[in-house]
Length: 151
Image 1 (cartoon, rainbow, N blue to C red):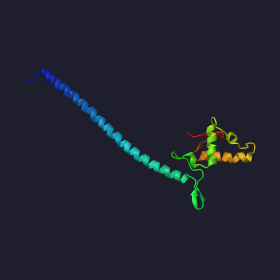
Image 2: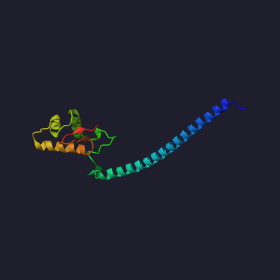
Image 3: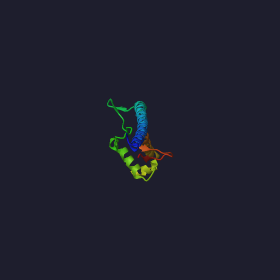
């Protein structure tokens, strides 16, 4: 005959293992459900990113033509794009905005660049370039016609 203490220990241990098994089965079911949800999420994100890329491509302005080849002087900014891809005048404008402390108006950028800001005909082309840089993602244009660099 087996020792009653040993039988009691075996019964208690079996109950512990049964409880552990229930917990593990529950965790396994939850893990599989989450994995399935992640797979669905991944497929949806793939589909949405393709749709967004298509929309951006169709919304982006068509480049101009120079010598029969498509050219865009101020390209839309992407994470892998550097300022050196911009024409030198636009690089100077970005440097002037960066040099200023906080959001700046076109007049302030003109002063930094040495443009005669009292002559409207010289200030308006600069304002147009600032707006173009903001439209293409190189600058931010908060309200009140001020410009800041992108972070």
